[in-house]
Length: 202
Image 1 (cartoon, rainbow, N blue to C red):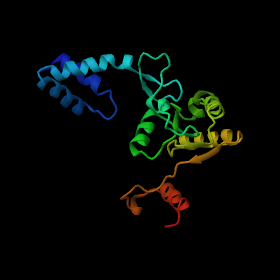
Image 2: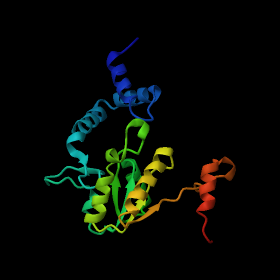
Image 3: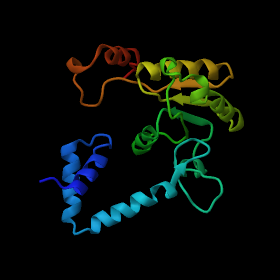
Image 4: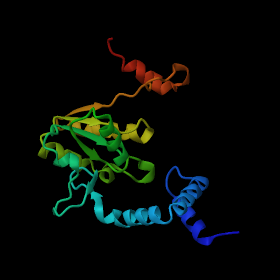
């Protein structure tokens, strides 16, 4: 027996990344088991999400909407952050991962996309001019490029290096190598090569 309402919600949930049809069905059934309370609370939070969360006008990270006219994220508002250190990332989840690690105390710049000429994404589309303007206006001394170790990520890193070094800003790249607890035999050649190239004294 088909239940149209259940199937419609299942299809919507299955559109989320990492959620297949079976997982979506488990979510729907769990919502039904909660006597409607969980479903109503979740629906209210989802409906309010676009009005509560926006994009920071300075860095592109997520920012909670307040009564302030300028939408700023918590990192940009934090005066304890080192404004001379700027970390360039591809996406918002990258900022969240770095913040969880707690090892970076500078500010961020979220590109939103990576350089990809085949897809028509060039320097203008990723906002290289905006990054250059930030380095001048905010007195940035070092830009840490934290784009992913993919073809597009590496191309973006090389472009940023070329443009930023011409303006006199130091450009560094996050190291990439073996994960903690990883085995050498399972590592790909590129990862192994970078791990060796980035070796340091014990």
